[in-house]
Amino acid sequence: MKVMIVGGGGREHAIAVSVKKSAGADKIYCAPGNAGIGQIAECVPIGAMEFDKLVAFAEENEIDLVIVGMDDPLVGGLVDEMEAAGIRTFGPRKNAAILEGSKAFSKDLMKKYGIPTAAYENFDSAKEALAYLDTVKFPIVLKADGLALGKGVLICNTLEEARAGVKSIMLDKQFGAAGTRMVIEEFMQGREVSVLSFVDGKTIKTMTSAQDHKRAKDGDQGLNTGGMGTFSPSPFYTPEVDAFCKEHIYQKTVDAMAAEGRPFKGIIFFGLMLTEEGPKVLEYNARFGDPEAQVVLPRMKNDILEVMEACIDGTLDQIDLQFEDNAAVCVVLASEGYPVSYEKGCLIRGLEQFEGKEGYYCFHAGTKRTEEGIVTNGGRVLGVTALGADLRQARKNAYTATEWIQFNNKYMRSDIGKAIDDAQ
Image 1 (tube, rainbow, N blue to C red):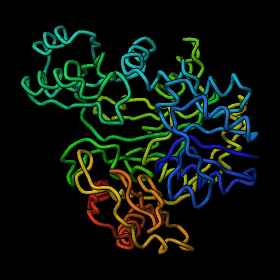
Image 2 (cartoon, one colour):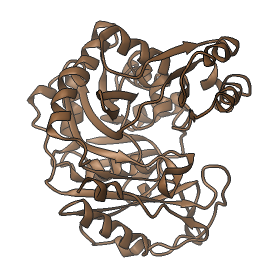
Image 3 (cartoon, rainbow, N blue to C red):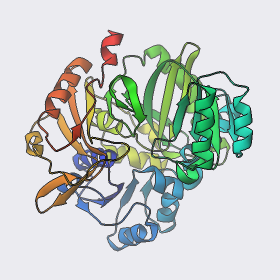
Image 4 (cartoon, one colour):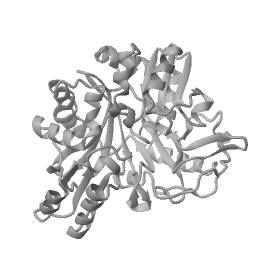
């Protein structure tokens, strides 16, 4: 089978590693890919939003399966374009990817179908949003409606901060067109947990839990990022929480999308907040999380292509989804200054240390191959992931492995997975 993965980050590298393990994968392409992906797949210089070129490449090279890893092409309708050309594609169609593409849509969906989430209001007008702020309790959360690289969320502790936030999102367009509409919702307190799932339009199979660290600095300080590290499983995702979510959140979301005429096939990422009142949905994503994929996929026992094909064919109910009884921790190595400004082109040393070491992975996020070697090419550079018998062991292994890598302006959080100790 010829497989093409669309994307070029750490998530796509993790997907490529899993596809490489599959008995069904004869040839792997990735568009555009990165230096790490290029070691196990053929990278194609086509951008993720160049739909015509992607479809033409898939046709010319007789691709059997396209896997769309990124949010932008999913929300933009790449799956629809591929399917129109007769190419099997894993991921939701455009009318289903709106689950992530519009926060206002997803909030309205949850309200309509009784799926627990934070109280909220949607706004198309900055003037109305500012007036509404005079009626709320603080802290409050402001969310740009559209895609904003995981950064379109502001937590405001005061009225002044909130007013500045509305101006930033809706008037100054800090997040571009994503801020044309805005959601203002109550601030929920509790532990965050991420649960990814495979969906075939009617059946949902959840994966093992994970927990991301979004803030740039230790102690959850600093700006929001695309993710500075993650661990799996979450000790806070108990059997009781799982049972509640299966009854009130997971299947209800799949059924709601089907009832709306938007059957969802692909990955639904559930961002959950474990509040005192019970689990509530913080956000939906329509694809693997990044860096959640980097800790969840290495623990999956199943052949990923078999599961993905079952999602496309509507036969997911026949899949027994299983994960190893172990743990994984991913620590993101970033460029100092991320997510604002940072240097690129720094030579990365030590990548060879991962070769042949079972249970250790170095997923490339922002890298590029040059004549001098592999260099940094983004804010998040590498995701160093390690397995362990339990979370403490995995965390120790991951931080040991971060020492193998060196590049100028290397930066990482030192407390990824520290919450593990709080739970035990």
